Length: 197
Image (tube, rainbow, N blue to C red; front, side, top):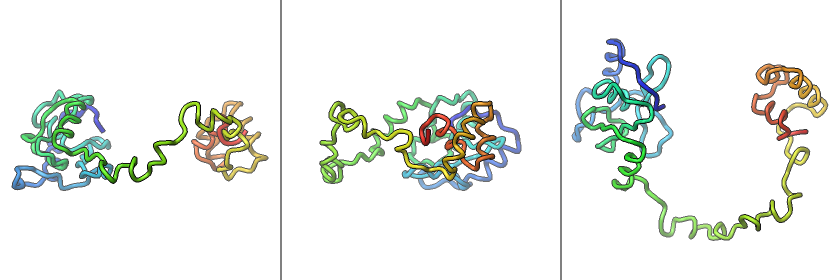
């Protein structure tokens, strides 16, 4: 969601302000009250929609209130360690590397150590065959290809030649997807011989 943010209209600013707490928390954070991302276990970042596209709310806050030259490759870092905070005084510009250094310095990366580390819980993984000792190098016949792959499509084998002929004659994947009742990924996999030859 890191992309350049256009300048705000008055309507944008009013909509944005309505989604932030009006009273700062005890740490001075102005928290995002609306929806957010759910892809981070440490806490969700607020999401603000502009022209139908989602942007991290703290990036919008920084761009609109501090630095309207913010580029998509620049990180906006929280000095307060609160991902929902949109207080521009708690936000600073930096690089991805700066952000990772912050994370390490503040002990937010939580590496698995001690008895919970996989080397202790599953020591057999340390001895898994690799390189020239891997099964695919020792016995290449065990590598599943073509007919040995599972049949994951609901298309009968008799239809595969027709599908491949349609594709060879210029039918687009999206059209083949509709005609044969398969996903575009399945069409592509069949076309390239990954599922069925």
